[in-house]
Image (tube, rainbow, N blue to C red):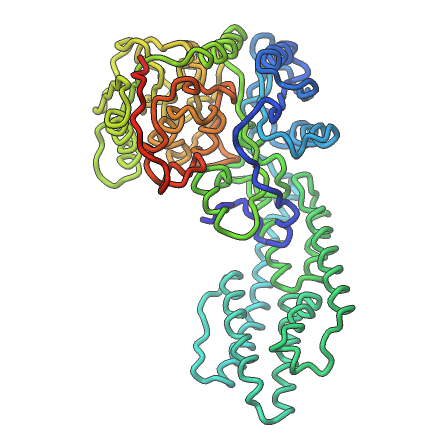
Length: 573
């Protein structure tokens, strides 16, 4: 899967509208904006407290007009169709109007903002459109296959050794066209019959015109190897006009493929593509529209969706590979262009208002004093190569790594049983699994503790009176930084513990940076709760950067070859 995952725009020229510089890390108060529910007074009160304590600049609170829910229990889910007009749109408008769109790297949602966006429901018209588009795509694909076959036949005529590529999907057909066309062009100089050369040239122009559109074909005809055989090569004026029409068509299509696009908008976009971008461009637009109408697993965590605030027109079913995840970020560094701007998002929320207030104030106090206590790791002793065993082995590796590279006390439970209830004291960092929505406190947590439990739907609710999920339990017991999914998340959507915990222990990153460099997917179920600026080991790092595994140092922007390994002096106790 590419770094953009299933949300990457298939119609690549439109993606250029989203390309900005990759946001630098080193999160500071000036890079944060706060999102509150305008109809929940406590939401703004908590945001004002946080802004004051963390010195967030004035004018950074964005008030969103949403259902307030009931007293002491704001609504935790919002309708899919309300997200763009009532949340994403107003936030973008606020940031743009206040000239903050290039400055803000992180959003913080507060008590009163929903946890979850519900699943999309298609209208009757959209259902009809979703049923018709596959037929339209099949017709376009058949026409493309016919044109590609004609070019391949011509290629084998001029070079009997040429073997056409295989594949009947649109992407494969594009590769086949790209492979066959140069074979004909390469053979043309050796054709002694001028009429034969002219016929081959006309065939290429005709087929490419249908496949790619007249304007893109005009640009291709300027290549010296092809222009040599043109009776009238494109002039500079021809090229400039073609480039202008292409750019205008792409702008018009992008404007009609937003999250609020109607069936009429999408029909217009298809017509523009068909008239200006050829069969391939039309097929890509149709494919993108089919994805945009896919409702399977289209529910998501509000905060995870907000990370893609500046993305437009992407499909909302399932997930996007997180462009801020350290491996993906490294991959982007090695290729031309930049990924779309992606925001970090964390949440200041909890089972009650006092819990949220304590979370804010404790985070600041502990950050100034240093987090003390042991590391508790609850694995299951699994072996083998199945996904569950592989994830369990990350917990096992974490325990071994911390014992080898730090002086911290590490409690490691490595059987199917959980750490016995209330058996430990002074837990600073916790990670374990798998007790589904059944919080079993492993012990008492140190003030400022960070921890998460890997299990499904642990953040379905923070306040439902029968809720026993781990996120609510951990927050109620004093943990100030945690994460969890608002619905079924799949195991591979969780941060790996042997990445999350070591990065936190270096004291080089804030909570938001640790989370967003290790969470694999955006537009999905995971949510991070905690002060985004919280760095519990800033004053007293427990792990030297040089002791991180070489590849993981890239998450800190470090070159693995020039960072010495040094043992931390502090015991962390």
